[in-house]
Structure formats: C-alpha cells, structure tokens
Image (cartoon, helix red, strand yellow):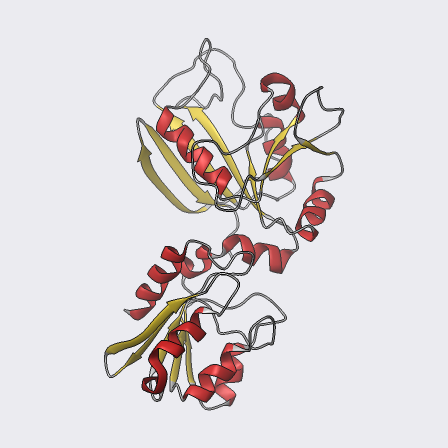
Length: 314
C-alpha cells in the first residue's frame, strides 16, 4: 500500500520539517510510483516535493499523504492548490490536520472534484504527535519516563542505576529528541541531575532542562525553575515553542502530572530485579480515579523491557 511508503518516507526524514510537521507523500499512476518525497527542512511540504518529481505524470494519479494536505498560505503555498493544478484525481490522507489555520484540505479538494479518502491511521498521527498536541491543545506533548523493578520500585538499595546501559542510552536518545526535559525538586535535591543528552546525536541541540516545584534551586544547578501551576507552566512553555516534554521526575511529580491529566504517553523501563523493602514506587500517591491506557507495546532493551502506552492519542 502506498500510504505505507509515505509513512516510511516521513520516518526516514526523521522530523526534518521541525518545528512544522514532517509529511511523506507518494504519487501513483496506473499502479506505478511516479513521484515521492517528504517535507524539506524549512522548505516544501511532502506533497509539493512528490508532485514536482511526478510532473505531468501526476495528472489523473492518486496522491497518498501521511497528513491531510494543507489549505492555507503559510511559508509555502497551499498543497490543495498544487494538487488541483497538477490534475490529481484522488487523494488518500493518513490523518487529519489538527491545525485550525490549515485544516479543511480534504473538503477543499472535494469541492474541486478531487476524490478524497481519509484513513485515520494511528501510525500517521503518531509521527507528528508532539506537534499535533502542541497545535491543538496549546501545551507540549508530555511523555513520562520511569525505570522500575519488577516489584514496582524506582530505586534499588546499594545500586546507582535501576536499568542497564542500553536502556540508559535510549533515555539519552529520548532527551535528544525532546524540546525539554523535566524533574521535580525532590529529584533535584536527591540526584543533582544534569538532564542533558550525552553520547548521542543532538541534531536540534540540547533540550531545555527544567525543574518543577518550589525553589530555590541548589547552588550550581543549571536547571530552569518552573514554580507555577502545572497547566499554566505548560501553556507558557508551549507559547515559547516547546512542543515535547520528557518528564523524568520522581513519583511525586509524576502523580501530580497524571492527576491533572497532563501525561500523554508512558514509557516504563522494567528491570529484571526485585528491589524488596519499602522504597519509593512509580507514583508517590494513588490516583483519584483509574486511567485507561491504549496501544500497549513491549520490546526488549538489553536485559530490560520497555513498556509503552498512551494516556491520550491524537
């Protein structure tokens, strides 16, 4: 299926369109791929790249795109106008555009007698999940990451780390892919964390490093204190361009974010260890009500297992 190829193109572009979404597109005519592409860094959208490659062969063709073609003038012309001008007969979109300024592309195409189909693919939505949350909810996409033992403890007596080196490397990759990383003041005082991405590529530079809670910060700390209500702080961060927040804070901060319904995705690294005793658990307080998670998956990371699940999916 050509949407799968469009998803592959967007994945290979690896967020190249940031801070805008990265879209993959494929043009197919008579069963043959005649054009394909992905959003350029600071340049054309994926649909425009694919149509340029296809040229005249786009007339009467089907265009597959990972997201609904935009219908507004931004830094680039509307993809809907390019599609109509190219004579494309059919457009298949993997997801809607949640940006109210750019949405409505499928309706615009339909009005121009282009056949449209929306597949509403989770994979397509997930590729731009941080941007989608930022543009539609006015806050960063929040991922809570925690390392725990099989008995649910976040510390092992006498050990510095809960998980192994491969899992810790994945955490640094997560930091490098995030706009901001945060902990709570308890973690600040207990661990003096740096929160930077180390020994991994940092194509966007280092993330902003935050501490939520009441100050002051310890002398020498390079973290940025955010001491207001969580919702207000997330709105302020979004206004400053922060689309993604990796929450590494301890169980107190995690419980506060979850209780305020501000966590979108959970990443739980489970180590093959029983900590025993009465040390801290994943959450410092019981939630007032259950949270139903979706898209649960698991994969091995060295000797550990990474569990992933969504609290919200867009």
